[in-house]
Length: 254
Ligand code: ADP
Ligand code: UDP
Image (cartoon, rainbow, N blue to C red; front, side):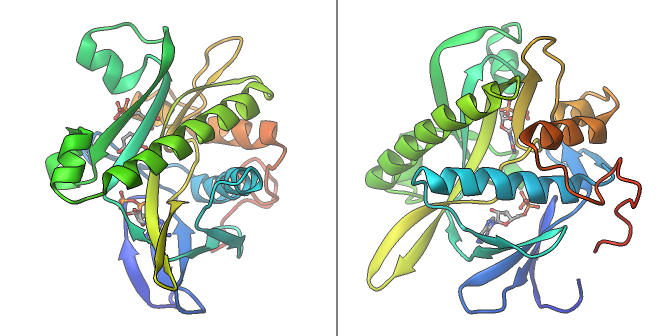
C-alpha cells in the first residue's frame, strides 16, 4: 500500500495515484461504517469481495454501453480506474420500500414501488448527506440540467439491467446508490459511472426468503455479514480465490 502516493482515504476505500496520468488505484478496505460514521467496524474480507463484485458489475454495465471509470482489476484489493471529477451527488434508485424511504414516510419495508424512484443526496458527511432536488443541484452549480438528464437516463438503464441480472441469480435489487464523475477529453466533457457497486451500497434480498445479503446485516447487527457478501459473489459466479471461506484466507493479500 505504501508504494504509491495516497490521494484520499475514505471510509471504505483509499485512492492512490495511478501509474499513468488521469488514472487512480482504488484500494478496497475491510472497514465498514454506518449512520454517518457513528457505527464503525470491520467486515473481514469485504474489500476483496467488493473489489471483485464491483469489477464484475462495472464490466457488465460497460458491455451495455454505460461509460464507467473501471479500467482493470490489479489484484485482490485494488483496481485501476480513470480519475474523474466527482459530482457531489449520491444518486439513489429505489424499487422496493426500505431504509430511509420507509422511515421518512412511516411505511413498512418490503412493498414494491409502482415505479422506480430516483433521489439525489448532497455528498457531504458533515451535513449527513441531505436530500436535495434538481433545483438545488442546478442552482448551486453541482450539475447542469443536461448533466441531470444524462444521469437520470443512465441510472434508470443501470437499474433495469441490474434488476434483471440479480433476478437471474435469485436476488431482488431493492435499492442502490450511484456516483458519477466528469472526464475531460479534447475540449469535451462526458459523464461516467464512478465509485463502486457492491453490497455496501445496494440492498439485495433473497428472492424467496427476503434474507438480507448486504450492508444492512452490519447496520442492523444481523450477523453473518461476510457470509452474505460472499453469497452474492458466489451467485454471481465470481467468488475469488483467497476470499473468506477459502482455505487460504485473505491475510496474505494486501
Ligand atoms: P467516502 O468518501 O464516502 O468515505 P470511499 O471510502 O468509498 O467513500 O472513498 C472513495 C472516494 O473516492 C469517494 O469520495 C468517491 O466519491 C471517490 N471516487 C470514486 N471513484 C473515483 C474516481 N474515478 N475518481 C475520483 N474520485 C473517485
Ligand atoms: N447508500 C449508500 N451510501 C449512503 C447512503 C445510502 O450507499 O451514504 C445506499 C444504501 O446502501 C441503500 C440505498 O443507498 O442501498 C438507499 O439508502 P437509504 O437512503 O435508505 O439510507 P440508509 O437508511 O441505508 O442510510
